[in-house]
Length: 375
Image (cartoon, rainbow, N blue to C red; front, side, top):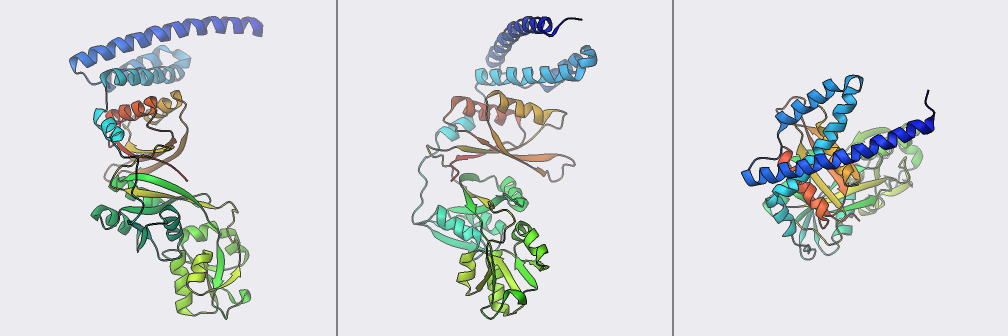
C-alpha cells in the first residue's frame, strides 16, 4: 500500500494534467462560441449536452454520477464563455446600463398595506420621509396602485427573521414583475396594548397579524392567550380601541398603541429580540443607485435533473453570495416552479452584468427585478 505522501504526489500530478486539459477544452469552447456567433447559432443546445452527460455517466463506471456532475459544471462554464462571445442578452444589458441612478423621493406618493401605526407605515416613513404615505387594504391593492400610477412606489414586507417569507408578496412579485428599487431591514418591537381601563390580568385574547402572532408564539402560549388574526397590527390596535373589550389586547407597535389611544400592558413581546422584517420598494421604473449592493431575479428552470445546481454553479464560479432563494408553484404547470433569487452584487461589475445577460437567454420566464441598496 502506498503511503499518504506518495498518493498526494500522484494527485498533484493528475491535477496538473487536468488543469491543462481544462484549458484546452475551454479554448475549444471559445472556438465553438466564435463559430456560433458567425453563423447565428444559439449557445444552448440541450439535446447535445444531455447526450454528452449520459455518455459521461455511463463511461464513469462506479463514479458515473460524480463524472456527470463534473462535466455538468464544465459545460456551464463553457456556455458562459460562449454567451460572452456571442453577446447574449443585449436588450437587458442596455436597459440596465441606461437606468437612472436618481430616484425621485420628494413630492411623491408611496403606497403601503395597512393603516397608520402599522409596520408598513413605519417603513414607508423611514424610506420616504419627504413623500406622502398612502394606505391600502391589501398587498394586491398596493401593486395595483403602482401599476395604475396612483402612487410612484409601493413598500411591502417580504421576510421576517422569525416567521420567514411573506408568501403572498412573493406571489405578487412574480405575477407583476415590477422593479425592486430599494430595501429596508426594520427592527420589530411589539407591545401588548389594551384599553386604558384594562390590566394585564384582564387579558384573555390577543389580536394581531398572523406573522406577528407567529413572532410572539412563545409569549402567547406562556400566557395562555387566545390569538385572533387581523389584517395587520395597526388594524388590530384600532379594533381593540373600537370594540372596547377589557379582556382583549393587541400585539402591535408602540406607535400603533399611541395612535389609537391604548395602554401599554407589557413590552418587548417578540420571541427573538433581534426580530427584523425586510421591506422592499417596488416601482414600474428601473432605478439603479451608484451604491447598489443587492440584485433580485426571477425565472423558471428547465424541468430536468440538476438544472438548479447548474445555475448555482454559475454564481459560485464568480464568488457571488446568494442571500435568498424562494420557489413558488407555476400556475397550470404541475410540479414546476418559479424561482425568486437575491444575491449580493452590482451591475457595475462586468462579470455580474454578463451573468445576468447570459441567464436572460437561458432561463424561461426570466426577469431582472433590480439592483438596489439595502438599508
